[in-house]
Length: 592
Image (cartoon, rainbow, N blue to C red):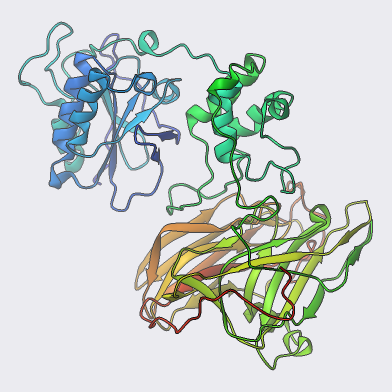
C-alpha cells in the first residue's frame, strides 16, 4: 500500500484542506438486490473508491464513466469500486436517466447502491453529486473531489484535460502525496435531489419485517412477540427502531472485515432508517393494498420443509424454578434399522425459556451411554445429528450433501436447563428429513478445544489459544464459536506456513445467541494447515453477565463455569460419493 499519505481534501466550498475523515462501515442494497458492505472482506484490496452519482446529472455521468474506465483497468485490481445514489431507488422502471448511469457503471461491473436517506453522504461530508472518494486500507479518505474536469458546472466536454482520479490512484499506489483537484465539485446538491420519504407499515416496513424478522417473530418460534401484521408491529415501533439502529437485532456478531457469510443477518442503512422513520412518524399503517404477501414458512412448527420423522424425548423432563440443574443425558433407540442420509434437522425444546441448549448426539452401534460419558472429550467427539440454542438455525443442507447415520445408531440427548424462576417441563422434539437425491458429499463436524485453562479472578481479558492441524484436505463450510457467560471474544485463523488468515472474528461474543457462521464460499484447508483459535474471557465486574468476578474459573458444564470450543463443519472434497438410498425413512421409533 506504500507509505502513509497526508490527504489533501478539496472542500466544495473553497478549496481548503480538511482533516482526514475515516468512514464508518455501511451496508446498502444495490439496484440488482445484492447487498454490499464497505468493510466487507475483499481479498487483495488495498483501496476503495466510492462515487456519489445521481440519474440525469451531467457531473454524475462524467464521474461514472471515469470510474468505469479506471475500474476496468486490470492494473487496478486491488481497488474496490462502489457507486451510491439517493434517487435511483425511487425511479420508475425504464427510466432512461437511470439506464444511462447503470450502463456506464456496468462496463466495469460497478454496483449502484441505493441510499435514499443519504446516510453515507452525511458521514462522508459529501454534498454534491459527481463527487468521489478514494479511501485507503483503513477507510480514511485520501482524495475527495471530481473524477476529472469534463464537467465545469455548465457543460459536459467530450474529453478531460485533467484526470484527477487517475492521478490520485497513481500517486496512492506509489506512496506519493496526492494532488488536490483543480476544479470545485460542480454537481447537483444532494440534499435538494434526495427524495423526501414518508414511511408506512404496509408499503415500507412490512417488507423489512417479513424478510428479516418474521422467521423468529411468529408463533412457536423464539421471538418474544409476533411481527406478522400491522397490529403486531404498531405498539413495538419504538423498540424495533431502537434495536435496529443499535444493530442488536437481527443478532449478528461477526466483524465484517473478515469472512463472507451467506447467512449474514444485517439490515441495510436504508432498512434501519425505514424502521426509525416509522416510529418517529407515529407508526402509520398506510394502504393495505401496498403490502407484500405475508411470508410462507415450511411448516407451522418446524423450520425445515416436510420432515419425514419426528422423535421426542421418551419422558418429560422436569425443570425446577430455581437452583443448578446438572447436564442430563437421555439415551433412546429410535429404531434406525438401515443406514440413513439426513439432509435437514430441526430441534425444538418445549420449554425454550428455561433451556440453554440441546444436542442430539449419535451413538455409533455398540457404544453405550456409559461409554460415551466416560470423559468430556468422548462426548464432544461424537457426531451431532442436530442441536438447539438461542439463535441457532436448523441444519438444512443443499442437495447432494447429507449427514450419515449408520444402522443401529442410537441417540444421546444432552440437555442443559437454566432455571428462570418458574418451574417448567420439557419434552424436546427432533424433526428430520432424509435426502431425496443421491449424496455426493458427506458433512463432518470437528472442534478446536482447550480444557486446561484457568481464568483468574477479576481478569478482564484472560486469553487462551488452541489449534487443530489438518491431516488431509478439508473444505470448511461453517464455524460456530462456543463459550459461556464470561465469553468476550473469539477468533478463528487459518495458518499456512508463515501466513495467517482470519476466517471469523467475533469481537463481542454474546452467550445468549449461539450463532453459526456459514461461508458464502467454502474455505479450503490443505494438509498441514492449522485452524487456530483465540478466545478471550472477561471475569471482571464490568461484565454484566458475570455471576462471580471473584471466582477462579475452569472448564465445566454449567453456565457459571466456562468452555472454549470452536466448532467447524467440513467435508473432504476428494472423497468419492457414498452409495446412498433415497427412500423415505422407516423405523420403530418413527412418528409420522
